[in-house]
Length: 205
Image (cartoon, rainbow, N blue to C red; front, top):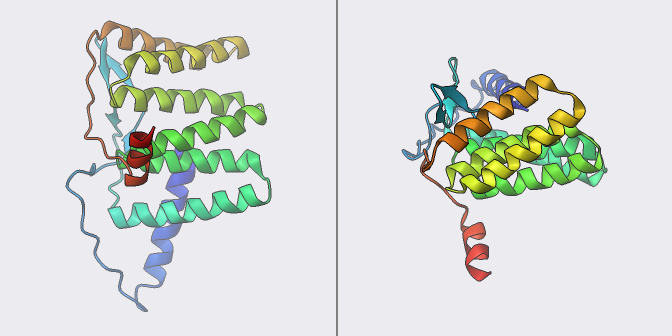
């Protein structure tokens, strides 16, 4: 998923550079609440500490403007694939959208798209993708202060990995589960941002 997002960003950068002489792009004003770097949302474990998220060593800085352009591009792909029932690709589009929202700490939207992605992935019997999505869901739930639910997602991902014989995946998830269980009072590491529509829907329930 992260590789496809990098490809989208690279394509957008090349297109923007090729057309720079025609029209100068406006400089985006960065929201101070947004991270300056791309994140690797896998959890790093050092001395039993649950570090979420871990910054990529070669993290690429992305402006709010670039992220919004990438979001539009992936949304178009998702709508096209859903319209023509190309569900095996649409579920990856949804996961990519979730990662873009995670970059902005828009966890309510990221969670929603991951759930849609998982529903499609299960229908397509794409267990690898389900395992990946469950780990991202666990990261989101930990970030918003739901460690018990995060652990449940990791356990489900671990059970699938074990059943499929994916030893490497199972080992990584086991480390994440052990790190989470060793943290008695995990706290969110990021400032949360929720879409207005999602907030209003939650209040209406």
